[in-house]
Amino acid sequence: MKFCQQLSSYLRTKEYTGNRLYGDMFEQAVLCDQGGYDSVALTEHHLINILMMPAPLQFAVKIAEATQNINIITAVVVLPLHDMRVYAGEVIAAQIFTNNRLILGVGRGAFAYEMALLDSPLDQSREKFNESLDVLTALLSREEVSWSGKYYNFDKLTVMPRPMTKNGPPIMMAVLDPEGIYESTKRGFHIMTTPLSGDQQLMLNQVDGFNRAKRDLGEKGDDLSLSLSRVAFIAKNEQDKREKLELAYEYYSRFDNVFTGPGKVSHGMIDILPRKQSMEELNESLLICSVEEMIDQLSPYEEIGIDRLILNMNFGASHEDTMTSIEEFSSKVIPHFT
Image (cartoon, rainbow, N blue to C red):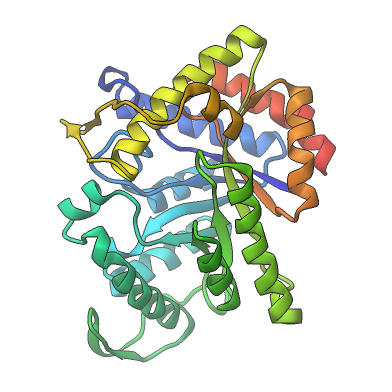
């Protein structure tokens, strides 16, 4: 099982500034490269202070300049917000500038507030995403592509330069629904999923959707991988665990606001709203624990077939504590799974 660090860019207070926050994310990436992580992940979001990364490809290039080994995953870029004729060239350039360490995670968007303000309403984004993905894969894999569809109509063109590899960087589909995972895997895509704050059974259903599709594909599915994203943190003691859980609860109070809630945002900062889930219930779905407990809890993930675990440690803890958690994980947990 491989491990990835999510550079989730959570600006808890505006006074901290984006400049300081992105400096933190950059230092985390360098530490991960030195500590045996397989990759780091960057999520595209706009206009809000959670997952605050409007330029993931640019950041991927910056990280690649300072690292030697880690892959950089866009987890995820929101295809309906881009023109694929332009974006395909940007992807190819990023593949070249990262020396072929880019993995392109794609999705249709998750926050209605953000998507509506950017003229791609969430309730209409699935259809646009599907066509955008088809256009993107065609432009990356073929020359002289023309298109006639609902969202794209253009005469023959060739995106330049051409990719370093035959079809461009590997593409990873972000899907939450187990049956959606099954269908996307059958189409030949790597999968990235998460139960968010859901229960163990949801995660097992997601894994089952992937495994069923791989069985149906036979040898064609041998190279496909499943990545699972979880909030995780190495806690120093029980008091520290409680403090980190409280920060995670606040984080999810904002996350739920724009993910399933009313989307109340003030000057770019997502309002903290009451949650139906208790802190104790949230604790059951997160991996905030000691090194020993972390190893015990992660072993079943490997057994059920998770290929890569994407760890989100950026939910409000100090940069110093987060760097310590990353280092503890790399020196004491990763060796048990490699």
